[in-house]
Length: 335
Image (cartoon, rainbow, N blue to C red; front, side, top):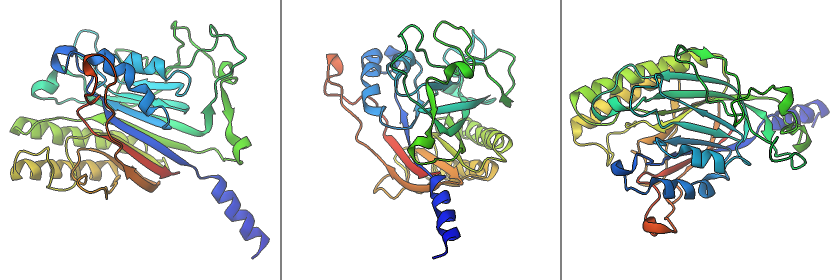
């Protein structure tokens, strides 16, 4: 085989890496709306998700800081979708993105149409551009006082829904510089000449319900989110959307009330695909093809979709009970 061909293939292989992305609707609603045990459940969640490269959480309406703080040493970058106004809606989006790899940009959009119970939550979508050549490694030589990680979760009330540049802040709200974080981020060239590459990842939680108004809202959200992704990632070579979409590509699902409900949701799902330019990540796990917690993607090679068992609580009144009422989904891709 020609030496140039060998070199070319070796370089191509060096540009690729397998990453795991975990998606979980954590059911961390305020106590009376769930099981009055949210803090205890939240404290047990980090141990079950820390092995994954990127973590997408839904319904982390409360106690999200418990999870974020517990993953301080493994997932140094965080993005959220806060309430756009401090007074309304009552709850934020419940969306959290945690990453081992450097987040370069954060983009946010809030759904303009929400119906019934969703009217009280600031649902929308949060997108991050991740640099896969920069993975966080804690610097054990630093003191605990100075070894703080950047959190990209700040926003201004007048921020628009398009691409926005954000300043990172440490735990006390003091801004940090890119150069100041070099001790915590190291280039992965030591691990096999991994070439710089970015991936855009979006997290969302869409309209629930099966009434006419809720179907209309879900369709409007599909258009808005799809256009948001298309506008912000039209040049991106790799894009992934994950979340509790409350819809899917097939008519069979335990989440649908009847045939008409199924048809409306599948129609809205098709609109999301069309507007975003993303393809459905097919689920081959028996009985999971109609799951509403799912992924869409473009420009990645899907290795597999897995459904780990939902862990059981080990202490307190939640002992022996599932930590969430929703499935965990893990997407493994090569980028």
